Length: 201
Image (cartoon, rainbow, N blue to C red; front, side, top):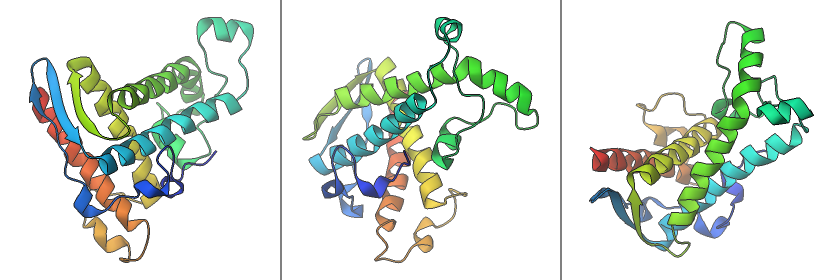
């Protein structure tokens, strides 16, 4: 499976974002943070988070079943980094200069990393109504949101070819390029993450 944000997910192409629709942010609340999302905003987040979680899960299943001992110890059947560049960004090697150590580390940690990403996505989907509305998060839920939003931003950065967050990203795409809308999503998610971090501090 290859992750393609333009293909749509839970929300489909009808949730394709526009610059004007992206404005929601978090603010402090007792024990965590709160924000209000309009339906288009909720649809964008739910669609992208769902797609990333599906990619991580589907690729894990495609890797084959681990042996009995591996399953009992929670080890991964994957020893090499994923071929898909998005997954390679989400599940990077721990040691860039030692392939043997990287493979061994991956066997012991990848299943936990994958399940953690799916769990974070599930928290977002459970707390964000499909039709939009108020989202009130506890501090642990805020941490899960931060992880899930970061995963989406990492995935988008690969698909959009973003290597430097400080450059003017709008210069990469023509106005009629459908990917240009996702530049605004990428930037909005950064703003959303910052507002959530500020709410926690």
